[in-house]
Image (cartoon, rainbow, N blue to C red; front, top):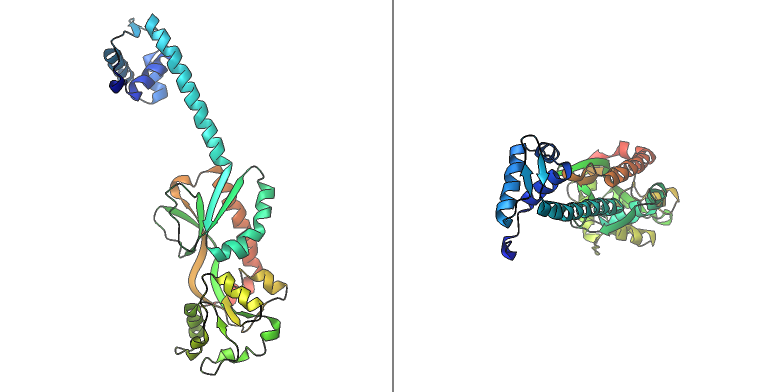
Length: 310
């Protein structure tokens, strides 16, 4: 008799189900990628545990007993239902794609392009997370990420999208009064907006080590696109990416306040766990974003060519 706390092992049940379905220990072993002796052992363990003979052993074949037929029917139905649920789960997983990325590239660059991805793959439900902190891709919540860095993250396969470059940007009306920013030792007639570390790198690329002008940065915002929003409102000159904000430049809403472009050597990367890089939906998104990134690089080729590494 089978005690509730001693339910037969799944390995034994799996071996029995395969042997019953094929009518052969050898064929079951081929399916399970093991040996006929191993299948026979697991079936013996199952028979011993439940106290019932499930097969009649003949010299060249095996035959189910009457109790064996009863259990085999139930086991085969159960495993068939499991196989079907696995297929459904895989189909469901392939129909949903969750990406996490930095707020600025997600808001200013990726989101305006997502319509083209949906048009190419209308069967995929897309979810986008914006987070300044890198999210753990092994936790299962996200399928992939767009990250900024040097492309070296353990356990992740990274595909380079485009370089991280930055330069001063402002409205056309403010360009003339922003001319003095070329010399950081002079008093600024216009506020500097954005990350102080980027401004420092930009001025170093210009040839300055001491940058008194950084004292004019009075507002610190959490994301680059917010600094650009201030610049668009005419509140100052922001340090930002001419790739991520190429639409604003092309439309004439923003202009370079100075022609120098700087880079810290980092880039934006599409990253995915190595174990999931073969997923169909991830391949589809990687191919699509790769095309979009190639177009962005081509459109901003002159800015990229001029970028000085600091």
